[in-house]
Structures are given as structure tokens and as C-alpha cells.
Image (cartoon, rainbow, N blue to C red; front, side, top):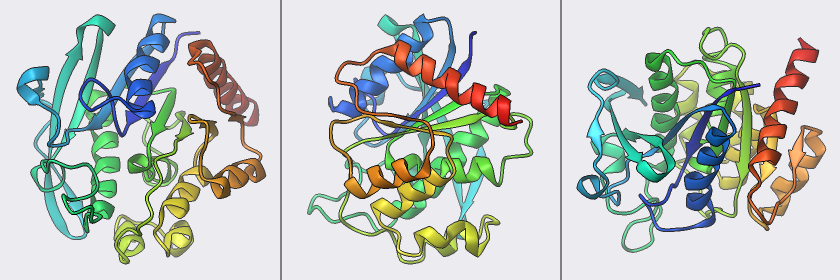
Length: 272
């Protein structure tokens, strides 16, 4: 049965250099779409993305919202571009404060950006608020990369009564995209400002890579190992969770993903 699949990627080629994740972002949505599904694809509009070359343009009807992060308003701009050969559009979450710099997560001296925590918050809210404006209800939200790690929490708590997301299931792909630093020490407090409880954020009191992804695992419905190696603590955490899991597949087989989406949605229907 045809499904609506929302893909959230940290990296997609040709907008960023080729990596395992960016190639997955380029190829998986296309293959899933070719199986008869409807897709939407989101990523950040980093300063490295060449707007003129890739013909990005602002979507006025989706832009103009302000998102509050740590009591500060930040404007949400939505841009879109097409990958013609894939017949696929990519939506870009844009904001001058967070995404116009010419680096992804570290500066020219390899220092972790102090505001990476707020970029995580803004990106999560930006994606979900834009989907609401699109009035497009996803059956599955598939998150790829740690930058989207708060989306499952928002969906399960803040947006759970919204009819757009009420029946949506969440899949998380884990990659070898680990960083060694910690996010800002006030990260959990900033998340709580959006209405979450101490219990909701207890796992990110120490806001490192492993903990923010454990939080994502806690709030998702299925997990995929997308690279040959991932953090071993996360792998053990996934296995202990007992949630549906796909181990690493050397070749990208869209049918495996499609079947997994069916399992996730079917299990949720049985539980309901």
C-alpha cells in the first residue's frame, strides 16, 4: 500500500559532498518514490549549499514563521530545489543565525559550534512546523543523522495530538557520524522550555552524541543501522530496547526499507 514518507537528512548529495549519509539521502527517497510512495525530503540549508548552482528558491507560503529557541525569536525560511533526474524536491530549513556559516558543525579551527544545541532545536521545530503548513500527513518519518535527534521527542510529546502527526510512526537510521564534544551544558534546560518535563529530558543532562541519540531511540518505533559501524553503546541500547531493527545492509535495497515501514505501521495498528 502506498505510504507518505517524510525523510529528514543531515546531508544530501549533490548539495553536500558524497558521504554514506549524503548518498543515502540522494538515493533512498528516489527508490522509495519509484515503489509508488509519496515522499517529502528535508535538510538544513548550510552555507556550503550553493544556491545559484542548485537553483534554490524561497517558498513564500511556507516561510515567515518565527521559532523561539531559548527565549529568542529566529525566523524560519523554507527553500526548495529539485533533483531533476530523480523527479524529487528537497526542502531546506534556513535561518541566517544557524545555517549560513561555511562549515557544518565545526569552525575553521575544528572547534565545535557553541550553538549546535540550538541548531538541533531549531531544525526539529522547523521541519515539523513546515509539514503542518504543507498539510501533508506522513505515515512514516524517517530521520537520518544526529541533527534530527529531537524530532521523535517533539512528535511523541508536543505534536502527538496534532492530526497531521497523530498516526505517524518514526524510524531512525544510525550512522558513523559521531562527534566527541558535548552540546551546550544548558541543552536540557532549553529543551524543557518547549514544555517538556524533567523525565522527558533526563537522558540528555549530559548532552553528548550517545545520549541525544538514546533519547531519539526511546521515542522512535524502529531503528536501522545505516553504516557498517556505529557507536557500540548505541548498538547495545537498540538491541536491549527490543524495537524493530534492521542490521547493516551492504547494498541499498529499497524493498527492505519499504517492508520495514510496513512492519512498523502494522505493529502500531495491532497495538492500537
